[in-house]
Length: 309
Image 1 (spheres, rainbow, N blue to C red):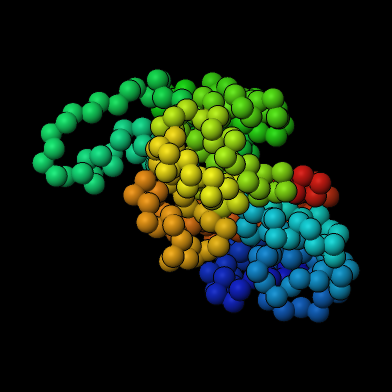
Image 2 (image 1 turned 180 degrees about the vertical axis):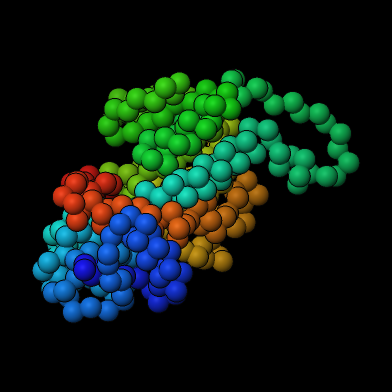
């Protein structure tokens, strides 16, 4: 029997104990899953970066660390973590993100705030363009970004995506690298940020790059707070160059009550709810990687330490 250490906050164990054990059994894996083992007896670690486990040196027989979070920026640089690290690519999280992004893109595309928030007796018809005439750019074409790009494409939007490496998605204009960045931003009537946080992506959306976007563009950020230079975005909102920003993630969370974003009528703050790891589907992802490790198949969703994700 193999030993699987669940290393996360106690309240997460309450949520995960049954789904994780059920998923391992369904995958044909006989495992002892607990929150405490002698480190030298652990075969796999199911991990949240905010757990008490920060030194992986004692886990001498551990075959892989299986992250419960999509983001790995707070753990990828840990020099004691020398075994494979797998990020969470959860179908439930992907579906939730797709629904949230499509909802807010449609909200901005249709100008729904005008009617929802503006019931003041002003009868001024405003007919939006068709989706085919609205250009949406997705920054980040990983699992989440690709799913959102495809969903928006299927609704008829003119969709482009930008990524560090070249990608190919049917019906989506795929741009990459430094050469493609300006083109991606220059055609973004609505910009969706779904990049990971790395040294290369921090403050990616700075004052210069915001200026490349069309006047009146809208930004939707469910990715990572540090992707945006906050002062630069506030400046672009003040000038009217950016019409609206819907932000779900921030450098400091919860967003401090005195942060300027709260006072801006053209900023929508949502409290990091765009998507969440779902216990059932994420448990199945973990179980599949444990199964793979036991039969000698390659792990899925292995983190590229050099790239940071």
